[in-house]
Length: 439
Ligand code: ASP
Image 1 (spheres, rainbow, N blue to C red):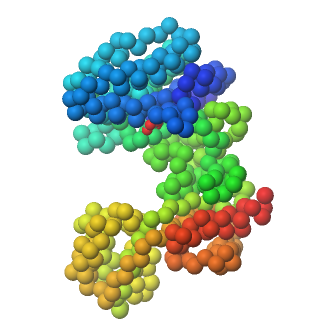
Image 2 (cartoon, rainbow, N blue to C red):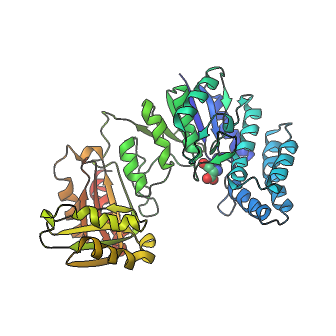
Image 3 (cartoon, rainbow, N blue to C red):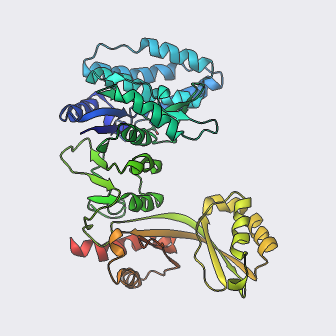
């Protein structure tokens, strides 16, 4: 068996956390490939090293003195090295970083140093080989991740290495310039490495014991989801449930490698398993609930809309031309509604409205703001009668006015639009009917 283990920033924020990670890795010989993040926050008021690096580089870029900031970053690493009792020195690396910052190597390069340096420490601590991600993870000229080139180079390289540390979050263009993924991107690196070595499991170690059925800021102590499919996870993370980077499932999904979310501070917990498909029923009819506030709906009416070929395309073109992506488009016979993010839409609202008038010639356009969307997700819904009925009767009892309903064609989710003010109560009402009464 081969396991790839990725440790998030909070799992590597201090020597003490490093030790926990080290114990976890050493306790299982199959944990052969390690992907570290940069040191995260040690406590709630702390700053992540990645943010310190961005800040430090901003000064360098502006031609200001950045020595004090760089020294603080160096101290964070030295504290870890001392705490682990290692004899390692990062003096050379910091000299190079200082020089590169002066030469304005770019903020991608700057941010990537967080993982790079943590990787060197981790490799020294474990006695594993260090492999610089810039040599094995590639981006194409357009800045897109080059999955095939990466997989070819990385799998060949790792085939020769029994145990290695590959820092997360970055790779390089063909010419060697460093490029990072978006924030939280070490999750993606872990997934890429798992694919390259055809791992049996990708363990993603973080500071929670898995995905929760609902947001703990709204629901007290929601249970952990035992097993969730990739598709269910996509639906929930799209709606804001963030434990794992959205793009992290794609590389492993191709190989059917399961992801196991685990808690570095509670290594005995089983965590959440993210799988391609499963015969395991979820504990409740629903797998999870998530939602987001801040949507607008643009309601368009036109008599005989149903028979007009191309109407929907023209309407959506008006959004596209203004660079606005739409979230949902429920439609009726003579009506069509387009849900968009309010903050994206606000500035361009009148431009979009006039473009719709010009292109599609509707009878009326009506905009509603301050809406929230709530997604009820579950592979079990397909085979259970009355799920929608239960949701809506629960919402009616809670005096919540449902403004929109959209059942995904996969029957994996039901999306409900309510006013922002009803958001929390909507989640509570749905949670109560499916989870609370069964606990
Ligand atoms: N250190 C990077 C960040 O803070 C990447 C990561 O942790 O995954 O976003």
